[in-house]
Image (cartoon, rainbow, N blue to C red; front, side, top):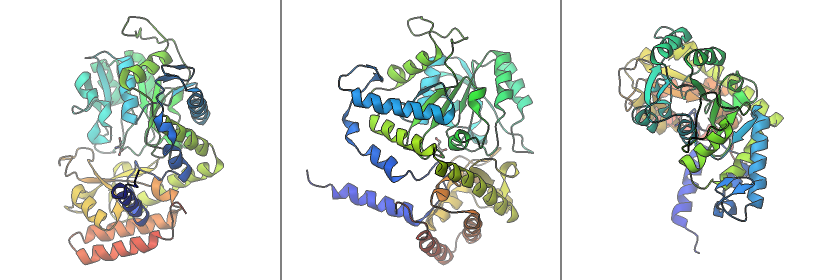
Length: 424
Ligand code: DSN
């Protein structure tokens, strides 16, 4: 076959974009060369529906070894008793859990998307809001923090079959123990979606949801710095106390229900090239080097949040406990999230516009931006660089219509980023 220059030239162009800019999208990171290499392998050729030792296709002996390594390393990393590493994404992991645990029309209680939650936690435009009956809790207007008494009163009123915690734009620690008590009182299953802070949780820098939550899902590509993918975990397998049954009416252990929720419930053949890459990433995440990395991610986020606040920006909840922060731009005038995103992208600083709690603007416009430190920390940036990044963002936002100022910032960004090479 002839080399496909059309596509490979574009891949090179995207790599150049990533290398020359400042990446602050809180859900993104830079996987290592070996994590990327594992995905570009002959493993993509193999069908392996089923689980190690129990496949529907022949020739899976090597694949089984690889998937077992991924499972063992994931268990060691999170202190989990059971994992399924096959979900193609965090959304797929949540779909599999809901399929396994709920019937169509069951009630679920999730964190409001406009307060920082996720589409798969009950949004009306997502399967979770279409197939199930969602209700939501949010943050308090004054503090930007969740009030768990209020969560309890909503749960008591709604009597959901599942309570979902976890977020894509909430910068504070979660009270998993308190949520479990609420779930027990109303007889609900407690699901924690730790897609964002998974790496910090794995290395003990945030509270451990596995201790209290019945089921935990995650992505593998955010703070965890692996390939794009998902995973489901249990602290220990358990006889499900909810009388959950298979479609044939058989009561089974939770692990078995969840495995079936992934395949054949919501997926076909697992992406074994990605599972190999997950295995490599989990190995990396067990290293001392990764421990230093997540410590720095957290320090960098704290410094960045403080710098924003010192410059008069309203950081929701007044700071961050993890790798991200949500900034309400209304504290600085009329700039919308959309305008901020567009102007910053022109300066090669990538963030995303984001709804803020009680936002009056639409999700396409928004009043806020979300910023995270996982990717810039991978490039070796530390506290001093975080302060400079905030200063550059501030320069752009104060000069949003000044093309020459934005170009000046972009030139500085491009030459500065050469000091923090990716894939040396
Ligand atoms: N799209 C991801 C994020 O940016 O947080 C969540 O799925």
